[in-house]
Image (cartoon, rainbow, N blue to C red; front, side):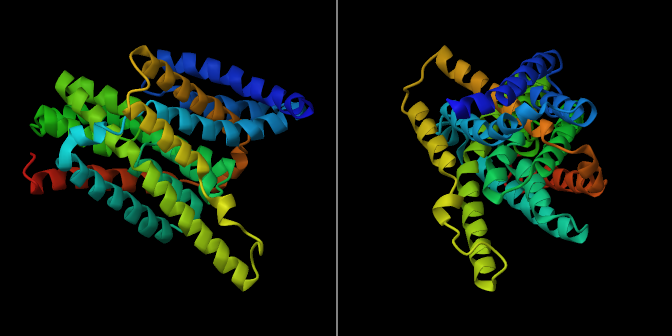
Length: 336
């Protein structure tokens, strides 16, 4: 009870911001509630200053509620959707994911961008934008500034993609399926994929959404890979005497991803029907906005500006390469 009293003010503050951010996001879906949540949180923390009694609750929301959000989003995801897209979408998806990670690593290293920040930009571009960043950030132990900066970068290009992809698709003479596959593999956030897909055509929108869901399922193996990488680094640091000696893989392991998988399996088995899935998805989105609002409340704008323009430039390069590779692989496999 004492713990609840300590964290409740921060949870309520994050909840209140999330309500406002969600409302603004519904008015301007191209931007989305998540971006508004981060921006409002940053403004409050850096201009007004959050009350001291909200600090623990904000920290709780930015970590625990973030993990709960990922689990809830899993309940709204059916793994059977992967079969519907067929191998043609998986081919393009795998190549674009590899492109995102390789580009983020090589270019990020050239620009001397911190490892965790370039990892988050890479994973956000490769998988599913803010949701992927939210899933990976606790595994690699990224701080609030890195999370806020990477999500802001990713969502900036989502907005650009929604505006330029449909006219570009028509200019290039894409079929509905080709554009749906392009949008589903080269745009990050689900709402942006849907917006761009349906702006092209209804069939393109339907296919783009399914392709995007296929990408989203890959957050499971990607999270496990990063868990093993983090564990390996911790082990090496312990051996060299520069890190925690009594580290535990059990502590590092992303247990919430296993619950995400369980929730997805329950959906796949048909336990959630009709409007239930819609409400689950809406709850998951709101919890994400709430957690990201808390991350905004924990972010220091001065620290963010220290990163400079390079992470945004990295985001441009990664996003551009993914978009181009998606078209190239479609061309090679005869889908264009």
